[in-house]
Length: 377
Image 1 (cartoon, rainbow, N blue to C red):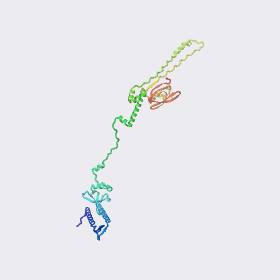
Image 2: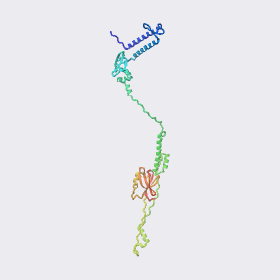
Image 3: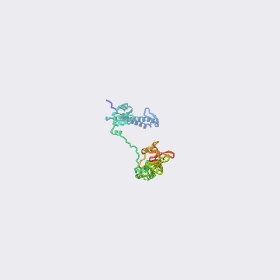
Image 4: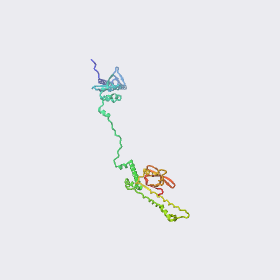
């Protein structure tokens, strides 16, 4: 007849029963030991041996620690569920784990290797909490749809944003910030400069136009642009001198005054007086040509086209006696030559006494240019 197999849980029950019986016997001996040797404790050996109380306490401590150690080893055994529906109880040996499985100590000297695929999903997830077993059990854990969503879910974190200022009007917002005040200042300066340009274009006093524009921006520019250009009164031109009398009239007058010059009059010595030539008449000065702002746009192209003869160092005979009278905001200049010219200004060669001087005149300050003879007053 075969001996029945003792299961691990039956061994635990048997050990607990025997331990409880031992402690009951030990308590009985302690309670009846006072009659033999009152100050000591006697063990039930033949012959009887009496021990002092402190030695007996040490023996109890050793026996108690031994019993609790055995109970702790027994309590470390776990129960694992298998996919076949069975369960296995024992101590999991993490040091024996490999890719195929792990060994479980089911009893004293009895080990059983269990493949990873045989463990239930709950146990595999528990094994994953152990850092050494995590890479081994990870391939055998089934990933649910919730786990897939949790792994692939993208956490959208809103970026930090600046707080929007409270809503207010345009001018209120511009006056409440440094940038807005700077923009308003630049616009106001541009308004004054535009008024200055309008004053130059319409030949108006710049101080008047800029002052009105400072009080009434934009409106001042519109008003003065709508007005016609103020024309400067032209200087009175010299009248042309009377033409010289014909030579025949002069000759006739001479004959009337001097009868000896008449034809048919004989002179005693045979000498005759020669006819005196009439005095050459003084040439007339050409009329000046006037170019005013508003009728013409003074720029580099205009000057190079209209006054091309004033750029060479050696001027032609037809233009060497002509000069340019330029009326600008800074004064009047009589220029004999244009020495240099740029996009916004030109340099004039003017005469100061017996020397010449170079003066720079901006185009926007020119009010009038007059082409005239150098002897024209």
